[in-house]
Image (cartoon, rainbow, N blue to C red; front, top):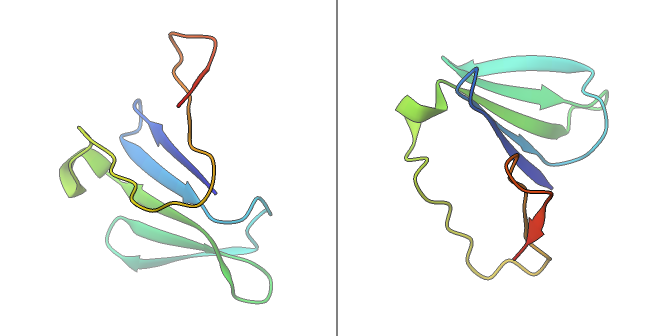
Length: 79
């Protein structure tokens, strides 16, 4: 799973599966679900994310996997 914020577009993308979506469905204004060929959600896009949510902090509780922080200003750091 990957979470990416695209500052230039103010768009937040949550990639649930690395496969290419077969279709997209705007389930609500500014909320787009990317679907696989068999209808599974493989990604969620939130347009105008700065207005839709607080981007100042990302809280992850009890996540079982490794969390990696990627910053354009650094070569890449892991926390």
